[in-house]
Image (tube, rainbow, N blue to C red; front, side):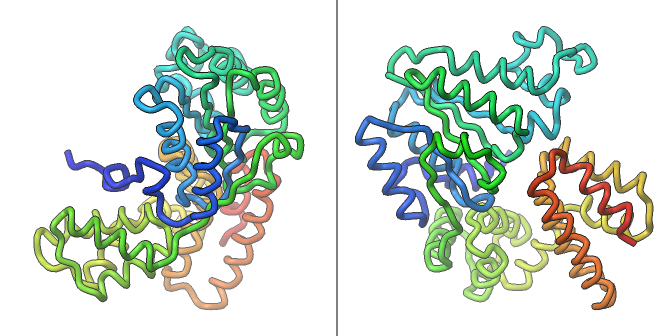
Length: 341
């Protein structure tokens, strides 16, 4: 089975991280000082927040970093719920069952119990350990207030890193307890050099126009660019990669569920649309914003009239605005498709 290139060529140290020079410099200084505060890393999806946190852990702990770093994805807890919890082997002992129907505690109670337990276990070989919570914007208000209290209680033995694409959805008391560091996409010149390095390592022949097409599609998103390059390499089968291959790979890489969701929404098939939304959120772990972005892209390529596309884009944008304050992404998406056609 071929390795994912996004993991194979992921930066292992802070010095290897692409772009985000100010954020990297800040993290490096904090690591060297030995006085790390709680952190809030914010910026668009795939802008390097998780990679930087893993690199920070390696710099702080060396070979024992895995013993002192715990990763949790808030969207898994609060978007997928108990069906996700029973699939994560770390939680089996706490839950006492692998049947979600036999879990009687609420998801928020389980979340508080799990985070409290991990935060309460002191590191054996360091002054403190790191707990990384990805997609922190998925935490509801009660969960955020509980997390704030846990951060205060275990500040001597634990540091939290919260990662989010929407810092405004974090409550003010939580934001005030962490140093906020911004991440963004990398310049094309930096990304181009990285893709050339990957291509050389994988012995790919890439035309200049193909490389430019990948850069145009990725728009500074390193993960998207590398994923596209790997997909193209499978289509090329040793031949020179051309611009046409790039666009073919982009079309092949698009999620069929999105196209099916658009078709169901346009046809007024609410039941089918609701099923597809559930599959994308639960099985694929997509956030509401990610689904909206892909739905918008699919709509642009749908062949609908300009007037209809413009009208539906307005509805998508209104849903996007509501998601900022929504407690449940699924409900807002279902409302969109119920009134889409």
